[in-house]
Each structure stands twice: as C-alpha cells, then as structure tokens.
Amino acid sequence: MNGDRITLTGLRGRGFHGVFPEERREGQEFVVDVEITLDTRPAARSDDVADTVHYGEVAEDVVAVVTGDPVDLVETLAQRIADAVLARPAVEAVRVTVHKPGAPITVPFADVAVTIERARP
Image (cartoon, rainbow, N blue to C red; front, side):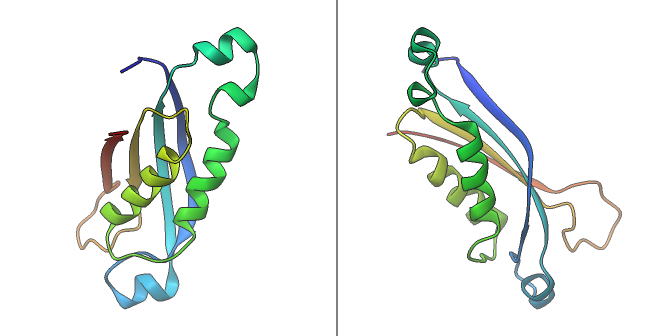
C-alpha cells in the first residue's frame, strides 16, 4: 500500500444516532476524522484535481452520512462513512474516527470515539 495520505480532521455534523430515544429525538454533534490512503503521484504529475481525491467533496459526503439516516451504533456510522470514502476510485484505504463528545455517559469524560480502518479488497 502506498504511503500517501489526505487527512481531514474535525468534520462536524448534527446526527440523530444512538440507542436511546432522546438521542434519536434531540440529536447531537458528531465529529469525524478521515485519513485517506492513495497514490498522489498522478495528481502531482498532472496538477489536476481529477487525478486525486477532491477532499472538499469527501468532506461533504462524510457530513451527509452523519446527518443522514440514523443508526444505533457509532461503529455502524463509521462503517457507512468508510464505505462512502472507499467508493471513490483513487482511494486505496481509509481510517475513520467518529467522535461522540455528547455521549450519554454518567461520569465526566472528554470524548468517546470509534476508529476503524478499511481497505479495498
């Protein structure tokens, strides 16, 4: 696998994900970090965005998943985001971290996050 990366951090969207009725009703902010593995050499040679991954479009796709159909688990949300990113032809692999800073936890905490890594078969 190539070592080139495009990283987007802190993408934010209001989602209605969770197992509790209040999470589905009220929603909360989710924060997503995405690290894309790809070969950037074609884009470096051509200086053409068509030869790479348009990170602005990826950001929009990620937020669309976050604000889209609700799921119970952050793990499911992370998988849906990974699937959306891997749908782009230039993407070889992706690491997705979904942060749920407003998770319903009864003790003080700073963040809850799930990180997954997926690659093309």
